[in-house]
Amino acid sequence: MDILLGILAVGVILGIAFLMSNDRKNINFKGIGIMIGAQLLITFFMFNTEIGQTIISGISWGFNKLIEFGTQGVNFVLGGVEVGENGVFFFNVLLIIIFFATILSVLTYLKVLPFIIKYLGWGLSKITGLPKVESFNAVNSIFFGQSEALLAIKSQFHNLNDNRLYIVSASAMGSVSASIVGAYLNMLPDQYILVALPLNMFSALIVASIISPVKVSKEEDHVDIQDVSNAKSFFEAMGNGALDGGKIALIVASMLIAFIASLELVNAIFGAVFNGFTLQELLGYIIAPIGLLMGIPTAEVLDAGAIMGTKIVTNEFVAMLEFQSMLDGVSDKTAGIVTVFLTSFANFSSIGIIAGTVQGIDSEKGGRVSGFGLKLLVGATLGSMLSATIAGLFL
Image (tube, rainbow, N blue to C red; front, side, top):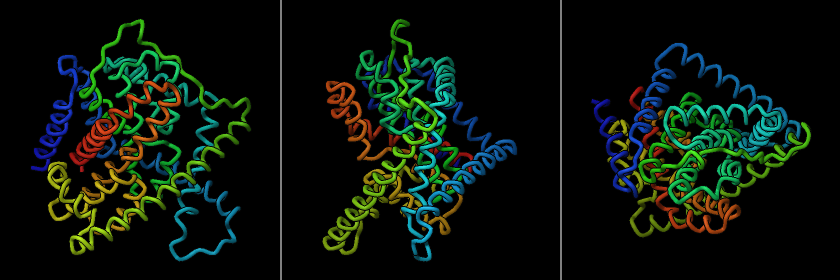
């Protein structure tokens, strides 16, 4: 029964995307089918085979060792600061971002990441039939933040019509940066975070390719990758990465303060007007029907829907912090589905980040992104739901 509901959920999600499509005749159904097949194979392999479990454990071990190394740096600077029993989120989670950003910067300078991203993108383009720019950007978005991923293809923006612009923006919104994956791993189960990374890459492309199909000529289908690191030495790359990581940590901390405080304010108003009813509870009721189809048990669907809705109106960190306290009281299936859903940048604030980045590259195209910003958020949210549903089929 759960499998049938999951298949129905996939159909509903893709059906909504189809209704939103601006060019249904040119939808690349073959490529979409290939990507859904790839998602099913990846999830089955990672969740249901010993080799897959070993790979997840190995990657998780590697990330956790990096977190330990990063913690040593944090403790050196802040070791004398007295904290409470549960520590301080900024110290224990956010400052780890600095170390991960440094590693990414160094790997970019050494041409390791550009090599991996280039050929993974080339392979994705070959098997799906998607243009190279869109495929490269989708892979690049797994490793870098929304702004950095878009800046890497800035030399191609003159070739991007509105549909292609929608797809690259959706990939940026539907992914997460590897520099903050370590922070996520400090809050939610490792295996679901790691599986979400490839699933969300495919889901963003699937939904965006239905909503805004593209066809390009061979002359337009090429990638001229821009190196956004600009580092001239190994140590400059380390310094740039550390500074970028520090900025990210402060930005996330600032957004958490603003969003959590605002959420408390909204809930106080809701409570006064609706006798204790909160915004999260309202969102839970709205998302509950699709949550049931995704495979979340009936007894848990309202609470899970509230967390998913919180992520959309605030950001993934706020939702993850709330969900972290609920993990002991929910089933493994709910934990997996909700964690995969939360592991993306699909929220209202991302519209401004992406539009602002594109505005800096091309002012005219920045205005277009702002114009389809809400459609972009809906598409990215559908992508997160698709990933979570696929994961739920194997839990």
